[in-house]
Length: 424
Ligand code: SAJ
Image (cartoon, rainbow, N blue to C red; front, side, top):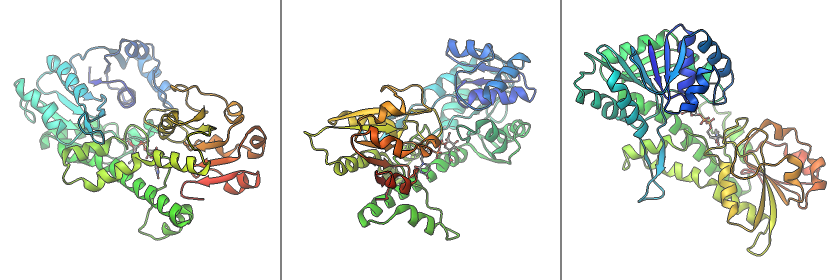
């Protein structure tokens, strides 16, 4: 094959099919027999707009096929998960788990030949490319930059827009040596329309991590501001709107917490690599992590929920953000888990999510006899709900709009007590 992509998940499969669509002969590798079978049938196992058509065309044309182990190829692209787990010793700390990267490198080594290029696309802690990719190759007798080429090219696409962003975004390419960066840059230049920036591997790792850390720290600032506004009885939305009229200010939006597979994890890779230096990043991460707990308290205080009284809450939205179907690492999930320890009945409604541990119910059933509606994901559908059609079904009349998504006036005039995020 021209290219062997190891890991056929949210990044690997779109990447493999993009190269295949450009005429490369691509082999996709996954340890899961199920994934290999599905892809070979021209189908997909993940949701992403446009991906089904692309994969099906690539498989039909013979440019893309899947297997469970790598085969000889000129280029290997590693796109495996790099999870971050709660530290056993310090529970408010997390540590990276690079075992999938290690196994990918181990699987590639037996088929690696002189002149080949190995690229790590997975988001990784600083120095991973040097220590976990290049080093094993050196130990196997290769000399990176001379007889093999090693680079880090982090993916930077937004779920829901992956196919467009794969080709249009700029790419940062970090080589173990300059020759490595140049080799990888040539490959991406043939499929990417955005600019290609070359640097060294550790810089590229930190660039990717800091993009998401920038977002996380800024959201923490917005979440802190929401708390300040609660305290001062000022409307946070108005503060942000007016402050952002300044040409050099861009306050982010507060919300029910920060979810997804990137923002809640990537800052930990930076913290882990420089714990003494990364103090603000750590503080911001812990602040964002604590938001659901703070808001559950706010609900309990407002509804005057003691240990003896009980209530029914309708949680709207357990996806990690608006208009996606992905409920892993989501603030809504944190709310459901936190409320499990309270004397409340929880009903979950989400028009996008299909798989969730807690039972998912329809809108009517969720609000039936409920005391409050709690918005924890900014799905567009919620904006079109008619509050006057719901209030009669409910026992109470509270709405906690933690995404500041709803039209407060409309809900108030329908008889609801509206509480927004940093807006009371
Ligand atoms: N959020 C806020 N307030 C905001 C913006 C977002 O509370 O002002 C919350 C969202 O509701 C969500 C979380 O942050 O819970 C993350 O959402 P997101 O849209 O910021 O990011 P992701 O995780 O979907 O994708 C990010 C993107 N990174 C950046 O925009 C810098 C994407 O480009 C990356 O490729 C992706 O992470 C990744 O894979 O690293």
